[in-house]
Length: 239
Image (tube, rainbow, N blue to C red; front, side, top):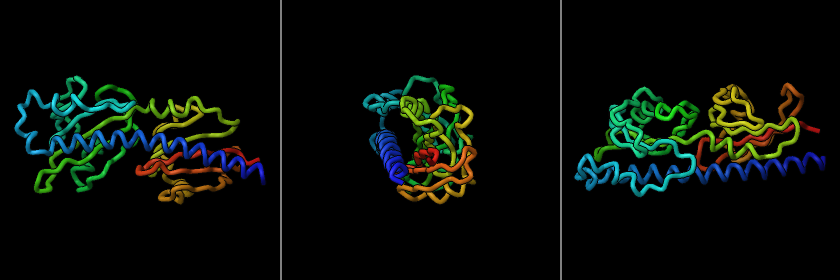
């Protein structure tokens, strides 16, 4: 029992440390997107000549580590401004699920997507986005930033895990973003039917045993990433 208690404490500490790192990084993206939305929505910005808007929007933006692309769309999903010189202005992102969500929901908060391949860079990413409104509250477009999945891999790769232990970062609704030991086939896997996962959603910390794990019973510690829809899970064999 003492060994199990120590293992549980160590798992709580490790998942908590990873969750705090991810939360800090997401906060940087949230700040960048909020600032971008505020600038685009300001009356003064509407007076800026078209050819100078990218410079006004992005020249003073502090790029978070793992930033892929940063752009603004109009109400039809057409990219109207972008930060990286990727020559994507005029391209449509209306086919992306994050655009449809913001168009159909008057939700001012941050939306975090599941893993996808960036249409711009072809890198594996998640997308963080916010809705843009006109002064009357109608939909005006979306501000979008992609976060490279390699950031999460870097967080987990150097960790020394005991044999049979798995560390997983996923979205609350069950999509895996990263896993250690690395398993490329796991990324994007949908776990939303897992009753233990569903029971953990909404809780800051959830600790339970998996009796149906293929390699026997495992202790699972699941820690929420503050102010996000992400969780960090550590599953280890019970002695």
